[in-house]
Length: 144
Image (cartoon, rainbow, N blue to C red; front, side):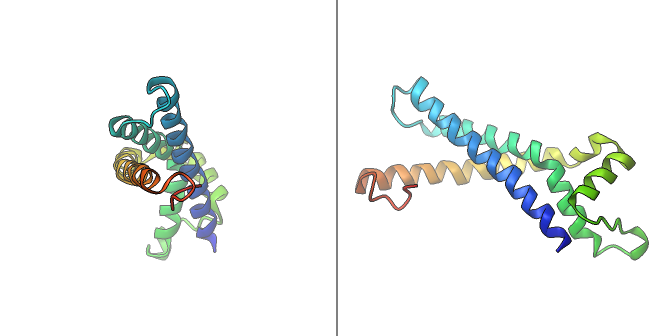
């Protein structure tokens, strides 16, 4: 149960940021660059790269706490950190290692999230465009 708070916090921070940024950026491209037309694949790729990278950078402390809390059980008892919850993890990391320690592992995390975002969001939006053209906006299985 202790790891659940860190997993939920990570999803709330990272998931909300990446999707919110992506959809706002693609809407900005549509309105300000494309005269109402949907963004191009390149514009979507740029938006998703930025959204994934920025979201994962901001969410890295949550990722760090999650990974440490999950790995704790596999460590020998003398090496375990025994964080009580995600707030305890943040507090102790900052106190014992400094605030910048919250971004340990950020580079590979940002690169992974950026690549993953491009594949997920660009393909999603492309499929949504195809479905909308074929079936109309209200019949699309992707309609939100």
